[in-house]
Image 1 (cartoon, rainbow, N blue to C red):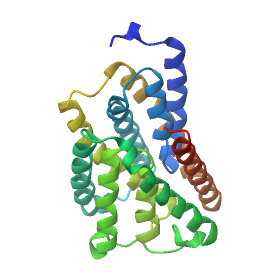
Image 2: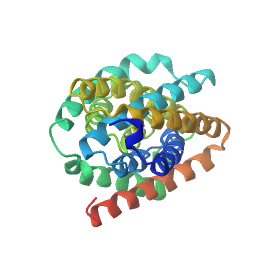
Image 3: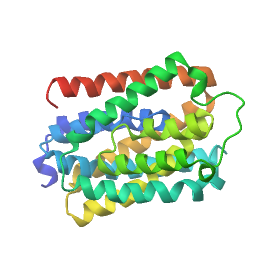
Length: 259
């Protein structure tokens, strides 16, 4: 489809959705719950919308990772530990997504986010405990498995994968939320590139709306990093908890309405 094939009003709404998505993805996750439906509203099939969304995911992850690194919040020593399991999972997930409908993983997403929401409300210290020393992923098989699962899920559908990563990085490895989000963006950059390569090879990307969305989400990511590094840790945790609950409600609504 050419640029003229798209409704200008819908492109504007998609741009707004991308700006919001880039912001919330930087702080927690779930932004693709806005952007994928926005792409589908333009007339893209579900598989093409899912694939095209990865351009924006890659763009905002690159922007967010760079901004967190500039602020001194990105633990570059952990990159080698977390890269392998997430990348392997992402390639397998993207291959599966290019052939199977994404709706099969919605119940898994809802269960994961629901669990995280309950934990953050009932035992907030379990997610990014204050004063805890971060652990190496390679010393904890459960963390390595969680990173692989996050890559697998992120490669498949992307929406909400930030919550899965935060449960591993903040909940299991005990990074504070700012540094956990920085590593989360770096993980997303890695498996975003791997999964996008699969979708490009399968010729499933609609480049015109994908590039517009990529610019919008990158701007949102810049705003998200600025907020994250300046916010009070307790305020940030409450904000993340609220985003988790909203994302749960969004997925549940899509299930009820047949989305």
